[in-house]
Picture 1 (cartoon, rainbow, N blue to C red):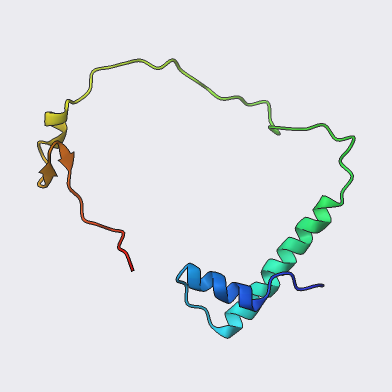
Picture 2: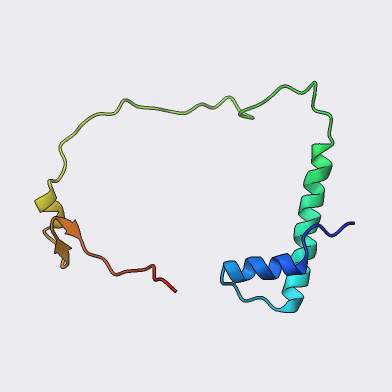
Length: 99
């Protein structure tokens, strides 16, 4: 089987994703991903010309209801139990930081 995904590509992707991988893991994942992509290439060769398209495999459908506008909390009621607010918004700790 031709190696489509190299360990160098896995190394580059792991750095972008900030995931630490060992050299053994890089080699393992390169082989596994290459195998998966190879399998997808095999699927592409299947003759599906006479097979009807299917959106669902069952006859089940979505159960929808009509949207109804109902009374809800106003902004003051919504924010009243929050410890940290500013100008009508919740204040939350920052979770994304620049490197």
